[in-house]
Length: 186
Image (cartoon, rainbow, N blue to C red; front, side, top):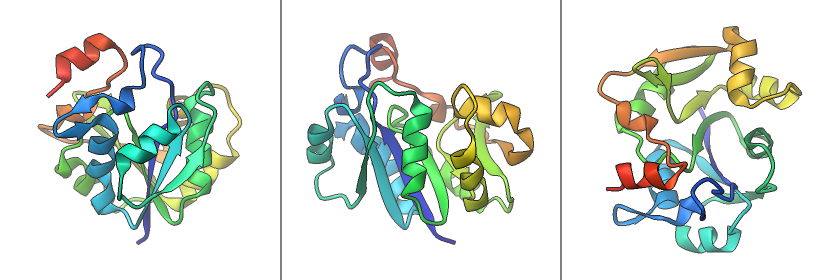
């Protein structure tokens, strides 16, 4: 099985008031934590960039990845589709503003024997990353509906399985606002 990690990091962070991918997190930044959470499980990495592209590339340093450029003001689904175009095999799709991914989450979703996308959940809420088999990637690429990936899953529930993972609520941490960041900053 070949897995491409697709990290979504194109947004401006308008609700945060700054590029949230570059905010300090642990010993590095949010983008570094998000990248490092999934990269060990992937054969290759694609980072979808838009706002502050050069700074993010510099921040990621010697890590190996391909860059795909997206409009920082576009809907996230556009970034997803651009990242999927560059993927080979199955995909581990991750949002860069979710810097905490327990290893058990990634191991659980990539080892589940299923021909559907695997969405990890905690307390009934969907988390990140999402494992997408190649055949589902093609469905997403062809979809031209309104709304984002959440809407896609709602319209096509037969293409995804929600996998509850105990003691993994950290995967739900989403840094959208200064309040979110202040609450969760480690």
